[in-house]
Amino acid sequence: MNSNLIKRILSSVFLIILSFYVTIKGSYLFTLFIVITLLLSLFEWHKMSFKKKYYFPGFIFLIMSFHSAYLIRINFNEFGIFNFFLILNICILTDIGGFFFGKVFKGPKIIRIILNKTYSGAVGGIILAFSGTLVYYHFIDIFYNKLDFTFLKIFIIIFSISLTSQLGDLIVSLFKRFSNLKDTGKIIPGHGGILDRIDGMIFAFPMCYYLNILQ
Image 1 (cartoon, one colour):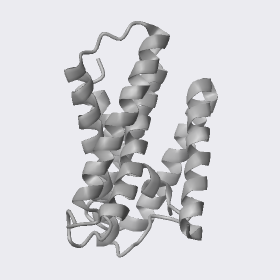
Image 2: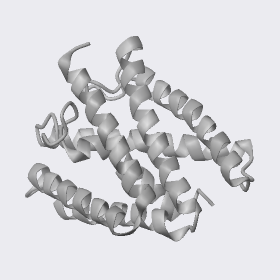
Image 3: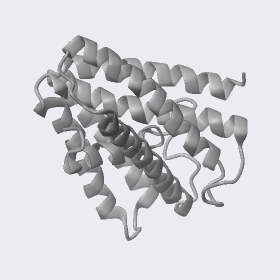
């Protein structure tokens, strides 16, 4: 196992624990976490797209994205945490599945100019998202005893979020390519910048909130 992969795994574990902790605690901790992450994301976007035509639309989109994530956490009573973790869970599993399936099976690339995005990775991301999220739904159903989603509804939710997350990953990768950047920053060991880590989430959260697919 190379050193970069070890850094990637350790930083991922730390970020997952941190994000889960502040989300559960809520209140000012969650708000502070959202604000700091937004400011870092805006700074990275500024560095990679300054003087580009899409500079200001990107700022507006990031603010709307983080605002939607905040509203999902606080607006749905006890299901706020459930919905937030659901999206987070699917995006993380999609990313992990895409990374490892892409490394193992390789195959043709989705877009030639983006070297690490393959069809095998895309399928693997969706498969792992389904597997992990069905387990998550099972335990949440036991805990709340209130979930009345049909399997079709669950299928649509998981597939929609996983696909949106992968599209977000591709879009941010294209913007990095336009700016001749490998990473959006260097703040996260093994990953790069904040936007490298949350590229799928910044598309998944507003999609879920504005299309209201979780209700």
